[in-house]
Length: 124
Image (cartoon, rainbow, N blue to C red; front, side):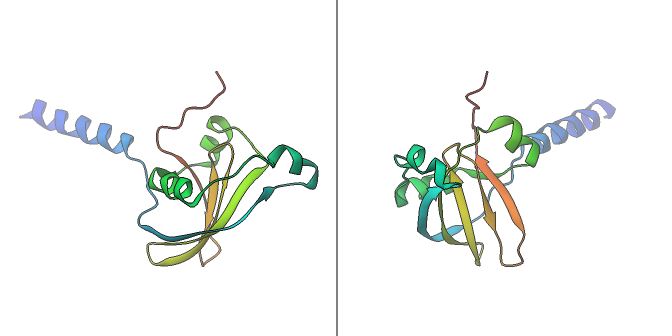
């Protein structure tokens, strides 16, 4: 019986460690702007575009990430797409950059970093 209890505790810890926090239901996605963080980056970002379908697919695989994950696992890019959406019945603004990371800002001004489930950094 003790072995079974220990096994269940270990199994529970393993499952919890593997959990990722998804964004929930995302609806009414609208792209409002495509651009670059600085005017000097505009030329480099000219070719970066995301269609509504690409944004919908991004959000379908999106998860909340920590600042540490954002720093270590994602490449920085000045190129972005910004827009609005409804997440779990809340109007939000969002940004996705060419490095596959971004943020979502909620009505209470809370800003959460987002990334992609199963993202692999290009850095080795």
